[in-house]
Image (tube, rainbow, N blue to C red):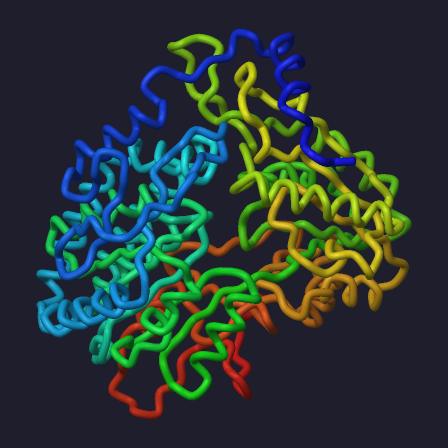
Length: 533
């Protein structure tokens, strides 16, 4: 069984192994929330968040009840959930923002976006600590999320002139719906670029986490006069406003295939600009390969944030003749992983721990993924490795229900979910093959992916095989990522729908060119245009 250990068991073990661990002073949720409220009192109540539209922070919406941090169950401020009438009002207000903002000069827009980014930089540690508590990111990775947003927008500030040549803003604002795992470097970054390009932007906070971080970031942006709106609510209830409203000029979506499919269906006959990033089972194929030390480094880094990333690699497809060497390299990587409470230290003046991952996004996800591991084993998969919660760094007696130790399943049977679905957690599946054809088929198991990689000593062989992979970015002896700045990003098959983004492609997706027949670069029906791998 991989079901998380009962709290009593964890308490006993960690009283013995980590009795001296304590929360680092100044990092408690109450301290961090107070810092955020002091930085932007207009956006926070005593113990709640506000919604933003029309330039005003509003104490409307019902805070999500029983909101708790995945880190240790600490009660935190949940998103203030509004209903459809308020969402329609927010869309109308954002449209009014858009009408004024699209006539603001580029020089003025650039100056205001730069000031907002500078303000976020000044509060980067508060933003990062909010991410730690809300979505369980270890400190180093939380800081990286904030810094990638800041540095990425600064790159656009330098490059935007050439990207906007002969282009104008959209007829209406951009609506943003994104998952919880990268509130700053994906969602906030995209909104600031959309605004820089001349559009107003509205975003729905991810219900599972990130609302407080986004509230502070949007407050800092709005203080500089940027036309951003931020609302919270159930996606199914707000869809008529945030997806289908006639005022919207484009929709940006990041999430799972089920929700993405519903969004895509709602857009079929609208002609609305869209870029929909969805999940895919990213795979790493290993064929005629010998550079095991190199691969070990990549695989260990791949466990960052517990593989709760759209570009994580949860599937390894291994040539049978290499399987023993793969296992000899792979198992020490799993045993070396460090996970636990992101803010636990032994001494008050110690730096925050450099962990590979903390909790999953919530206890329900940890239980669901543990059940999927058990299902795969029950149906015939081989448990190659199963970690234990006692190996984590936890405070004595803390709630560990959202944590899952790393696991690896060899040969998951086709009848189980882990055979074809992305786990979105620290669980790998491994498939052994005997031919190139089997390797390619196993790597293409999910009808499209965002990234893939091939480990092969002969680059020509690797490139020949990569041409048969249904992934947007393909690495040879290295992983691929979403990328930053000029690098485009998209997907193949069911992993992506609509315009690709990144660099000038993100700007083009939210602006209109002089050519009325312009076709955006992307994954559209009957339109195949992808970069070289």
